[in-house]
Image (cartoon, rainbow, N blue to C red; front, top):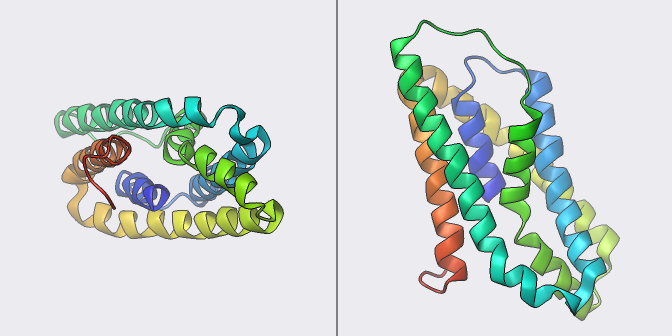
Amino acid sequence: MDAFAVSICKGLSMQKIDKKYTLCIGLFFGGFQALMPLTGYLLGSRFSGYIERFDHWIAFVLLALIGFNMIKESREEEEEEEKPYAGVNFKELLILAVATSIDALAVGVTFAFLQVNIVPAITIIGCTTFVISIAGVYVGNVFGSRYKSRAELTGGVILILIGLKILLEHLGVIAF
């Protein structure tokens, strides 16, 4: 769900759909949503307590930083002319993919305890996330093209709220 929401945010900030970037978003998010449970599965219970103590803080900080950056950029864009497309930002995609999938490490540990067949599980998780991430970019772009200047601001706020949701869930303040 977080990957879908972040994909919507990325679509909001695109002036027009870039198919290469959209494919990269799907591959990064789908790939990391599959890779993190596999990593957790392989690490087993050895590091589960450590992972669970910090994963929510890492996700919150990363999403908040990118969210605040999007808000800052939306303010700067209001004062400037439209700037040309800068291409795929792999560093940002990597950070977003890690932030939205880091809690899946603990899921992988659970898979190990439950003796889940990991290959079909991560294949389904990765493929599903790939598809919904691409759909999210398109959904976000439809709204972004209609509401231009407010779209990136909204996207930044959404990223911060997703990070806050992850943090509050893991602290036991809210339950979803």
